[in-house]
Length: 198
Ligand code: AMP
Image (cartoon, rainbow, N blue to C red; front, side, top):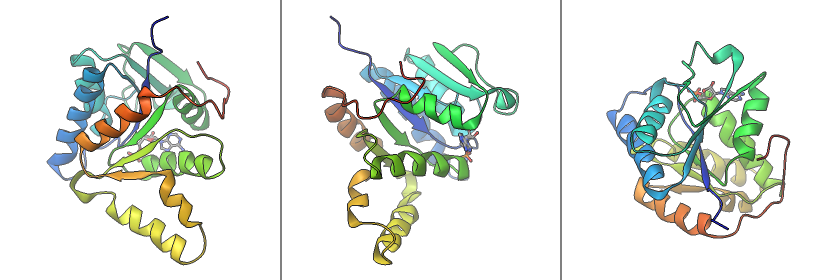
């Protein structure tokens, strides 16, 4: 039997941000996924660095899956040319379907939406509901204040120090690729199987 297709869920901004490094590393992410034969699972849009990841992944021949709620199809320019396009009713359903169809989570720079998505998978991990790796790609040091915030939360007794072990801040894409190569080579642990799993 051929090995199962491994999928990486990319959470990232629906805007480009101020630093050209965000766009550059988003494009490199799309190409990196294709190079490794990993499927991109993402928010299906064609805007911001989310659009950059997808465009680069498609150009390089990656498998793709996009998940978008009906009401964002226009605003985020949902792409009709993805390998699989899932249109959901709600934002919650979107996150659930993206998560269920992925083996690892990679978070690129983004805003409140990306933070919402990151904290949801982090809290599920904290509760022992899954064991999927969660990587924060620290492009231009963007996520360093978030890691500091989590240290602050630990220091003030609102989280166990073990929470630091549930995600990893990676300084560059090469490090992210190396981490994903190790974890995606292992058999998938199925701890949680929400509706919408493949
Ligand atoms: P942002 O990081 O704010 O640019 O948003 C990144 C992506 O997250 C966009 O596609 C948003 O539509 C999406 N998003 C924002 N909030 C949610 C949510 N509660 N559930 C699922 N996706 C969300």
